[in-house]
Image 1 (cartoon, protein in one colour):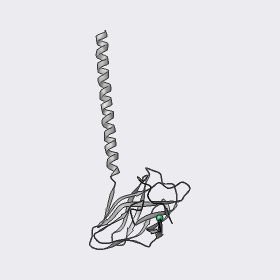
Image 2 (cartoon, protein in one colour):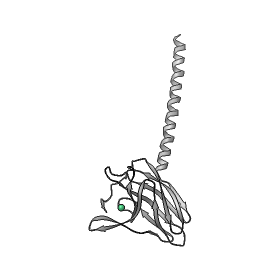
Image 3 (cartoon, helix red, strand yellow):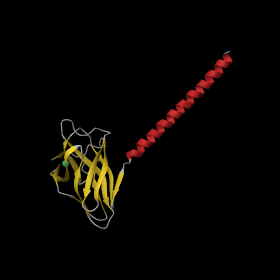
Length: 178
Ligand SMILES: [Cu+2]
């Protein structure tokens, strides 16, 4: 009797171990997937490579948001320009250029973002990029983990809809004023 019980218990333990192992493998797979996605997402349009569109969570009580990119690369031999952007999430999207005013970072709307031939333009947050996109009249707050579409219009390459990932910045960067 006790021998059967012991065998049963042993089998049970093995079963539990197998379940634990499956759970562990599952967790590792999930981790691998999430780590993989942390490296970003890219979009191609003609000679342009649009790298990792992302946004920082919007501040409560505000109706604006900022969209950044790891970079936009123009691999072609002809210059291009980002001339327009739109999203269902905001009343309008402005192209902003950053500049230093003393030690305060300021933003100004510009008609277009130049993408010279054979070049890479950084549009990162925290003062690392020269430009970003500003969502004005935001219809709902941007929360960590959200995704939304934005359509970019390039002078030569044409229109491209890309997915923007909302994520908390790893560094807070420079405060900026508009
Ligand atoms: Cu701005």
